Image (cartoon, rainbow, N blue to C red):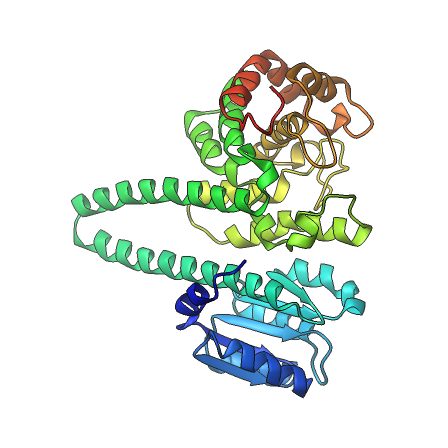
Length: 370
């Protein structure tokens, strides 16, 4: 349940461009949005919306798809060309699902189906506002850091210490946020922060890589914050369309992290995008094969699959360590060893006991197989 009072407080300095050709829906939405945002500009088609966007740097764009003159897809493409980090929420009719994959590929952040579910919309607004606030803090911090660098080297050293501490805290907070979206995952994300560096060390990766993957691996599924709860938390099988939307968490995560100059964030982006690629080329989102898949993505893939096998979910039972190892090495009806880098599987087997110990020490004993 969204805290409306809190949402009003954090949204009051956010500017919104709302593009919709249905007048009644526009009036109702503007009435709703006015409860939260001080500035809401409207447009009735993509051309008008793009023109207003070019004149003003909006924090958030909300748009329909089917509109005259220029539809929402074309407008989103033009806006992303201007600012690829621009947050966009698309309000889509049920019969417009064919546009969703194109919009996902463009980097559109969230989708709300018509008729609009107010609770779902507020949830999307809450997530978008938090991302905007985070981006502002990052920009403010960057400006502060640049000013500090210009003053003196000693101050730069102090700032770098702050960056390290801030990065560690942000990873922990973002990991917590991802886990809160799906409480059944428990400490899954945090465990990957232990598995991945152990496997990287076993194959002889340098120390800076080992430290970077310990930082990055817990955020492998950060893109799931952009997946609606009705799909993310669905207890039964997903439809084909829902599966495609779920798979988009890899691209959503990469889009969230894209454009950073920091090596660890760059690795996090790579892992978010590639941890579901498979050695035999059958993975997603790009169907990469073999060493086309970055080594950090291959490492996290092995770790993610091991931990997923150990976890209990509404649709599957938890497996023991020995059962999970056997499936990774020999396969079952859902898993094939050809999905993984064979050298990584060999390394995993050599340190499998470390994986078992990590899982044992970092689990919610009320939920997981002991």
